[in-house]
Length: 463
Ligand code: GLY
Ligand code: MN
Ligand code: MN
Image (cartoon, rainbow, N blue to C red; front, side, top):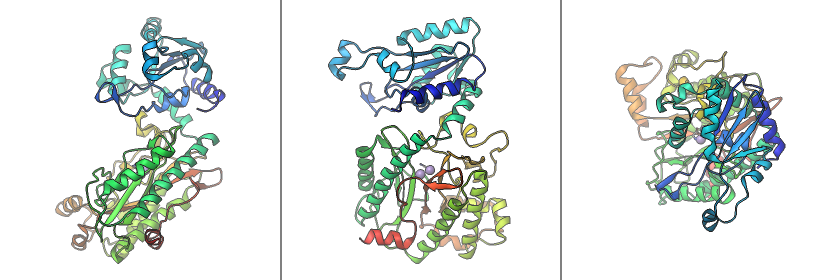
């Protein structure tokens, strides 16, 4: 964990952003895979981790805005726990590591909240995303599961976002580490991929690297020759010459900071000319976006600039037609890239998505679009120093989507549907890097950038 002062300051800054009431933090609990004591790898709630630093289950905390009192709720281990888990520090020792003075047993949270409610205090809570915490919140506050998201405190959410979205130097150091592990995962997969292997063998190698250098992959690895399925988690196919392999994966460090990279490689080590042509278009969009990232620019404008590169490239290849600006304004390029250019990243790979995407990626000035494609952009607002974002343009040939647009005549003035029939087995290409917005511009996270040209990828695969 970071030093005590870090957590004390974060909580003080947060408390200054909410007018009155009690801030309630629910940490995560263990979750059973197939029976209660056979659990998934424990992952603490990221906001709990950010403000209270303790990386273990069954904790809760409150901050009383008016009195400034902070209380940590949790139980000391019993002799039975010690038999199975070994000796553990006392709750008061854990609290002192994060600068919290008051500790109470977990069972006292209910009466604490009840007393506060009886005296008319507002109880602010964040939207829960795990069933366990939905039940916990229901028991504490009586808010129906279906209403918990809408009843969550906007002031609390906005306060958390405003702090977590601007990364401090010690967080950036962790994110550089996450990026280096992510690099090793991808580089290994690029070097090891061979025709005849099954996708899952590469997934296993990559997960092993994530776990041996950090906590785990930052999300279930996407690795598939059917890259046109954007988040493809099936890994049963045999690598076959002529096909493309999309690999989207990152690491989470032991401090739980994430990386998130995508590279697309030819399964057999050599791109076809048709694959190179599309790769070069995506790579140009990725490079242009990277060159534009700096404080003061909105990420929506970077997304649209990348979209214009994609559309112009596809016009040059004869797959789209017409005026590039008109095509992008109409959202025609979204047939090929139905997702956003990127998202914020930090303790979560899609940072703070549990709090609500619009609170993280948009604000009072910048509102989310409703157009197909652009509406999937998770980060649209103005970039500021300390933001960490992903830059992940892609180009996919999704037969069902192409058929739908064709039969409904959607954007037919901009799309050469007849030429697209040759691309129904192409798959997709995505290239993703992680970028820190600095005071004067931006930089890539991690020591090295993964190969991002067809020649460089082929050279690595041939070594
Ligand atoms: N991990 C999926 C993405 O790149 O956003
Ligand atoms: Mn990704
Ligand atoms: Mn991403």
